[in-house]
Image (cartoon, rainbow, N blue to C red; front, side, top):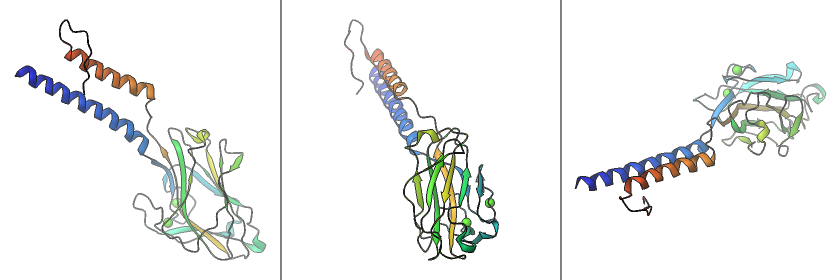
Length: 234
Ligand SMILES: [Ca+2]
Ligand SMILES: [Ca+2]
């Protein structure tokens, strides 16, 4: 009777251990962490969560702040204010940009997202770019045109196809604005989020070794004296 109970206990223990390993393997792939967030609620370009910088070569007179949104807000941030960029005199800001520098050291599968809206004479052809060295910028995706209201769906650029952005101290992102047709035409931007997977993902070989070790231990436990055949734990 006690041997039967011991066998059942061992089987349950090994089953739980295998389940725990599988849970860990799946969970490390599912989680993403914010690296840096700009909510513009304090009406400046300084980051509001995490570390990173945001700069612009717009005419400073055309870098304003106006009512924001909870679209893409994180960590309970209220709508507050949003960045509001104007076309400027003679639409001088067409072709100008905002640039974000964020170290992604310790992170992979980088995603950049934000909420935006634009007026009818504001920028309507905006190109997202990334940089691996902070100097050379590369177009990513097609130019986007903001909707007329923030709505509830953010603009999202998933950069997992650019492994050079993983674990990169010089990672940078840029939006180049174009298409404004009046000096007071605007785009508002709120809740810029740079995020990535922060966990160390186990190598597949490591996972296989771990599972093999567990099942082997159980096989040894169940092997009877004089019996060479390995018995499945399942
Ligand atoms: Ca805001
Ligand atoms: Ca700020």
